[in-house]
Image (cartoon, rainbow, N blue to C red; front, side, top):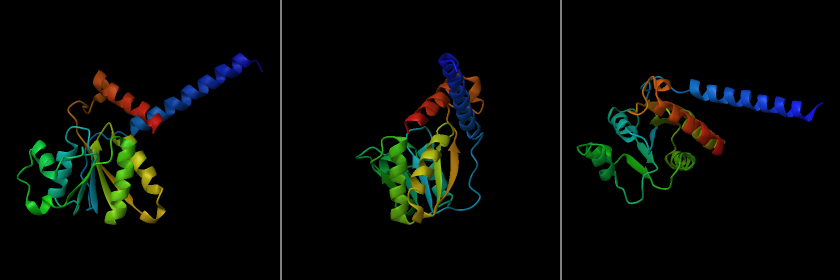
Length: 191
């Protein structure tokens, strides 16, 4: 067989496999946020996107879970600082004490590891992952992979997609929307 033909077929195969991978990710972006139908053991919020922390605090207030773990918080930032930044300073003290901060993660991959450690420490079995719609497919895949590394955890992962002002429902009609999706897609190769 001619080496050029073989190279051409290989490149076409790679393009189609990659296109299939992109379509699979694209299909997993939720159209809207859907509140969990039942309670969970732990709400997990990943920092880095508008509205993620605020939504997770609201879910805590609604009684969706007894505890909230916020991963990726900058060192030195307190629960009070986060509440103030998210216009939630009036949160009841009994709820404030149920918010735990993870300060070791600086990436989604590190978030997954930090969350696994928190899940182990807290003995959580059913986890609600709160992140932006565009971020959800990659974050969920990384967290599932990390949780599966420890089979004794026996966890169930539920997701909650946060609406972002820069990522509208019709994201595919905007350059910013495509930019966010393609960025997440290419990041998935690294992690």
